[in-house]
Amino acid sequence: MKMLIRLLALALSVTAATQAIAGGDDYDAANDVKGEGPAYFGFVRDARGSAVVDAQVILQPKKGKAVTLKTNVLGLYRGHISKAVLSDEVQVSCVKTGYKQTKINRRTPPGNNAMFVETECTMQRQ
Image 1 (spheres, rainbow, N blue to C red):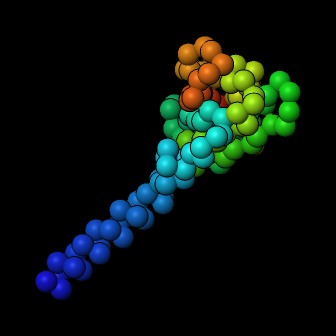
Image 2 (image 1 turned 180 degrees about the vertical axis):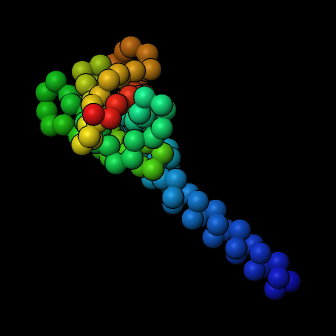
């Protein structure tokens, strides 16, 4: 019985460590706050498809204050802007020292009532 408990504890610790390294719980729907605007999310990758870690993703509404997010080890980002801001009026851009943004691909259908706004940035080393 003690051996089974030890194996179970080891399995749980490995799972928790893997989630922490990969960005884990910071990027799942359970962290969405009721009443916030749509979730802006996506990946920042280089031209080969590799993750760009610690890139800044800037969500700039036509009116109001920009929100700056940071990518995790998978190149994933996720965040919100006020629900008063229309999703079609938010420009997404990506920045990282030593890189330039070469492409931005927004996959969210048009309409100001989108609950999820997915955008992928492609960057190239300078």
